[in-house]
Length: 387
Image (spheres, one colour):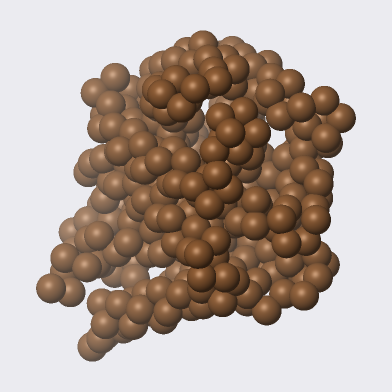
């Protein structure tokens, strides 16, 4: 039983951590209604969640390269989920911002060490393994809004369910990884795999030029991911004229598609190659997001969401692997960038998109995603497939 949990531990814990990350965007309509926020203020909540994580995750990834810190995994997802729960007792906008920031600290602790664990233990099928890990996060993003939607029925106190999930995750971690000489999660691979990995690492090189180009692709995907996560519930309410209580279900549908499409992207990258999968995602995204933004009926809304979601989520695993391959000697640092900034960087620009929505409207503001997607596509064609 422990062996199975160790094998699937990274995606399970990724799911638990991203319960909290995914729920925050679904709570935006709740904040708007209960605290009288505008779009800029609402998006700034996501900014606070991402700004610390964006700075800290590369640093923590570098630390994970030098020292194995497996306890970052349970501490990280616990801080994230308990912070989301504490929003139930928030009495001001400033307190929500502080708790959102603290949740970002938890995510920063979690991601680099968890992603590096995948690299150390699943190198024989890295595309699929990273796909499974990414699916765990996408599943968490899908289920988080579904749980967070309970606040529209039961009130803010319902958020304490996230603390219960964190506690269950910690217990699972202790059961699987802290028994009889198994305290270090990196020891989940057998001795032969570890020795092989050490030999590969000793001869590995870093391609900083390619990684620098990859940063533009990472930034592009991150902006697409974060901005859509924030504005899908708002678009559902303002354009489709849906109920606020159902807006979190629209976000859940988006992330549920993402969970499936993330895994497809990982499997596809093992067949087509990592760069070809990233390019395909951007090519499909650009026309579908135009339809999604301007369609005015619910069938077109969810129909266009499918190819749009493929464009965003299919790139997640391949980008992470590309980063680790370009920086083969510093895979932890690369993971902190690709997994960390790949989720959080977009939140840094979200307030500006919200400001445009306040001045004009949501649809006009979301048109900024078109040039962002074009930049990601063009930069992906400038990259070469790593050896």
